[in-house]
Image 1: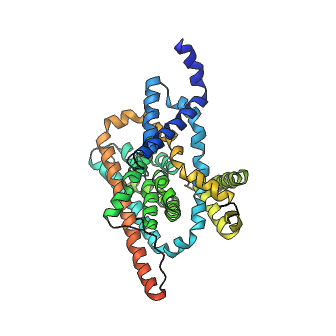
Image 2: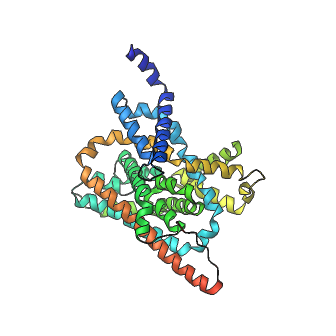
Image 3: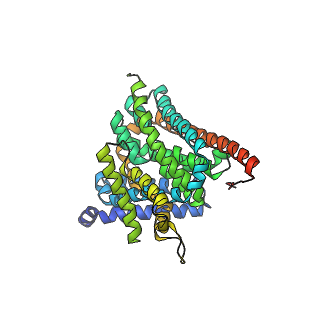
Length: 238
Length: 137
């Protein structure tokens, strides 16, 4: 009885769409309950809930994605939408152009090289190391870069989101330890180290931070697109 | 709303077309973001001008999308389920690499940016008396 009911329902993408939305709403409710603590990250909560549901119902990722792709599609327009805080805060950006360029370059290099180096030094495989290299950039860029240099795109996507969650969770605290206390630096660092996930955490707090996060995401993609193939060339074969 | 969505998805389409034509290594939406930013600054300032009833339609739609961006990452993030075997095998280097490189990238970007802009600002405050600081706390 359960089987026959479940099977036609599982075929409809609508179910996975609804569950994904509900899981995220649940994550947001948990974060509100935890007094908006960045530790209770709604993205992380929603992913854990969905992975548990897929495991329990023995559903393949492809079947899940047939429904969830409609949410995934909105990533495109949402990325484009970052142009709005960018345009509204152009004056702030113009005024700190030199710092922006240097910080971006330093941050991109540090995060691409240190990720590969740590995985390599700790005995991780070449594929894993190369999947780590582009993980700081926004998920769609990261995946196409991983593909290009011989990493695993799906692993890179997961790493990109996990890195974004880490940056969202610890970002403001860690930067305050280093006495970084302006929205421009917080926004840029979130965009460069944690791409969209960390930007989503910080953007609602300040328009200036959102603008610098947008710049960070876009330009980091550009810079990393040049760094990662070089890192891949320099990484010795095992 | 229809106007705002047309602008956003239109810019994404333009980015996608440009990417194919010029074989750019960036995804369409990121190119689209830069195209829209340039258009908004040079030609279409009116799209962002607030109306009597508050922010413009494009501003409102963009803000809604951005403040809920987290949701949009969930489907791709669930993709981790297909990589659980690699994760189980090499979890230590993966977790360490992820933590170290993310925190290092964050700190280096934030500190370099902060130091340079703070210095530039001190100079401009000294010369013009103009200060534009919004503090995090």
